[in-house]
Amino acid sequence: MQNKYKIKEGFKEVEEEELWLDYLKTKNKLIREFIAEKYAPLVKYVAGKVAIGLPNNIEFEDLIGYGVFGLLDAIEKYDPRRGIKFKTYAVTRIRGAIYDELRSIDWVPRSIRQKAKDLERLIGSMENKLGRTVKDDEIAEEMGISINDFHNLVMKISGSSVLSLSDVWYLGDDNDKISVADTIESPSSLNPDIIVEREEIKKIIYEVIINLPEKEKKVLILYYYEDLTLKEIGKILDVTESRVSQLHTKAILRLRAKLDKVRTSLVT
Image (tube, rainbow, N blue to C red):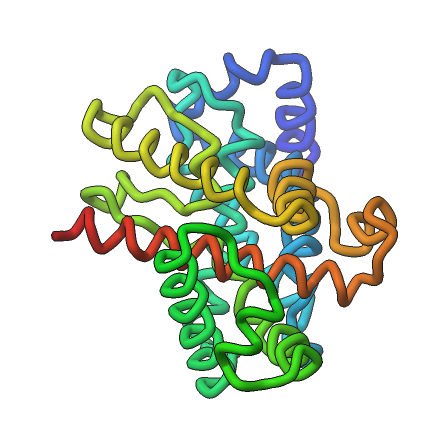
């Protein structure tokens, strides 16, 4: 055990890229353990981000457990020759593993999921018809409900939107899949057709986000790109955390409505 510890301590003196290349060749278990220990805090960090907005019956320790599998998967599949930092790659895999498990246990009630889908379709239909972003009062009027009832509905379905930007787009085999949130990355390892499709999705997301109402746009940028929590965003925008959640949900519904249209066109 002492000798094993000394060997692992010795890895600290080795450049990380060199260590990865060595692991790629040898699959040395000690190197894998060293890397897993080094990046273990990343699992807790990602789990903490995902936990925001989830119901209380979802245990934080369970999220960490799901994330560990993602980290181990990242270690096995990471290739330093692609020019992507391991931390960036690992966050994607950890988050994906957590979301995959959450989907498998289907923690969002079916009725809430259906309401979210119905609202998403309505927003998409209205915006396609009008050619612009629709306002809350216009959506409420179309639904035949008060603006307060509309806001309450958005809050009810806010939990189901947490997973939205991690929905997977399959672009070929298992190694050629991306999530909407991951389109900000552009691994050079992808084949030309995948790169073109990925860039098209990035362009669509950019255009949708640019045309969102100002506060919704800020929430998406601060949450997904600046990596802030809803609480931190609330302080920046000077609104409550629940209001941030509401803005996030509406932004996601608009984004998904646009992307579902694109997804359909890609399939057909």
